[in-house]
Image 1 (cartoon, one colour):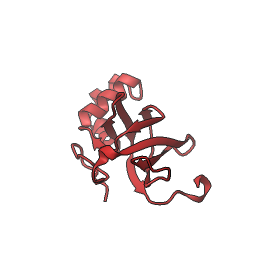
Image 2: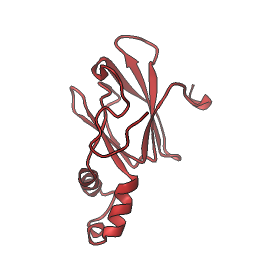
Image 3: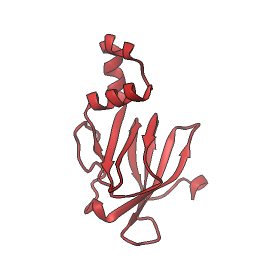
Length: 135
């Protein structure tokens, strides 16, 4: 079960997440979906896949080590949205808009050896099998 609360650590409940490497498989721009392949150790076949849906932003290399994703606090998500221009500063004057935005949108993060990995999305899910059109 994927954890969804801000501040949650290791949200995909992966044992020894540092042993896994992630690779961007596909970004579907019309559906705003980001698919990642996740490999354990040096295995050439994915152990599982990750799907981030309703993606507004992602900042990552094509491949990185570690799958220990956590969900940042609402304020950190909003700050990144402001910094990247996804929302304008006017949103800060409307608490209702701010609350509904942060209720639905999450900042998923992990750290690799190279840099922080960041994805702003509505949800993150572990998949054992890919949809047929991506297999």
